Image (cartoon, rainbow, N blue to C red; front, side, top):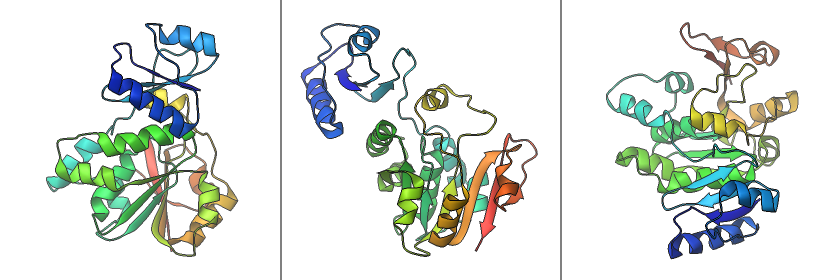
Length: 257
């Protein structure tokens, strides 16, 4: 992995790229009007590209980057502000001051909604096992302007941790968070948006295990939630009570404590 800048480079981009390279402990490579594909070929590697408004992550040989976008969180929060319902919010039953551990952060859409629901008094921690995804999502949460003050605050309050979910859970005290949440990569793909497709190139594909669920059960105070494809075998395998959604490709499973 290496860091470079967008095509129309300026001094601020260069400084940001150098700082990013130092933070991630990877080389900084000056752009020098070379194409991304040529730089990747020369370095035999994927790369992070620092632009004016965002950072993009390119897999080696790919022209479709991953970059942070709050995805569905914006219209979901707008709907909640208007008194509407959100399936995740209905299932999670979150309220002000609660704590949530999102063990599969991804693009953080559900974590943003969770942070909005628990408010300034609460806390949301998102775990991401891929180092560069964690970095990009963390930066995006701090800098993305949704034009909604309540959503901006919700994004800024999320704590992003680069770790495996199991390692993180093992180091947490008993009943230390209200809700533990899992949204693993689906057994049957429903990855439809461009951002999610790009995410799939880099995402950590660790499956749920008995040990992981045991640790989640120890750490969760009120409930464990699993979001998965409607055909997933995980619900039955791990004892989740399934909340079926007739018109959706995914269901929620709940284990209440």
